[in-house]
Image 1 (cartoon, rainbow, N blue to C red):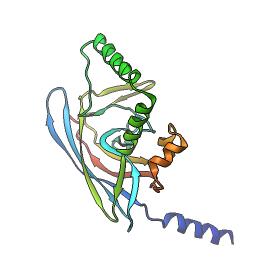
Image 2 (cartoon, helix red, strand yellow):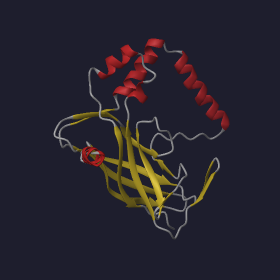
Image 3 (tube, rainbow, N blue to C red):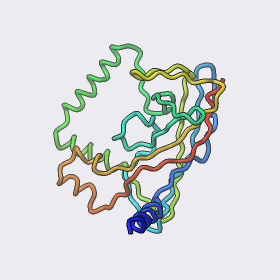
Length: 222
């Protein structure tokens, strides 16, 4: 009897079709010089169900998988042969990067952000937060596929250290990239009141779950 129950559970769980597919279509070198190599990544999301789905995701920027589990971005994970590279920041995006010529410039920027926040009323700040959430709501029709393009930059550094983790990228080994999405709801709504949650969701049923793409070779050689 126990065997029958376990078999039924296994069929039920593993027979469920995942609602979303994320797949890397191509990864090519856009340009390369002595200090950096720029890649263009093409990937897509497909609604595998026969009904519309809604979820929270910011596909504009692909970030390291260790950069923050509560950020609704697409994550990338790197491998050297079959071994995961446990180091962050090897690849960076090509947009929204702010450089500072000096510590004084950085301090002035932080002060300007602080002044901006202080100049806004609680209602204005609440509205800004809501708009940030709403812009990441993705809607897909039944069996729809959406294509995305992202730029990734490698500064050609081979030695990386994150806290106690040290890693050296071997130039003669093969390397691969894999994408992940963690579709969340409750975790992204923690800073909102119950009334705000109802206003934002409006009875939407959001798709949740962790989904992983195929692997694609990436050129981290010389």
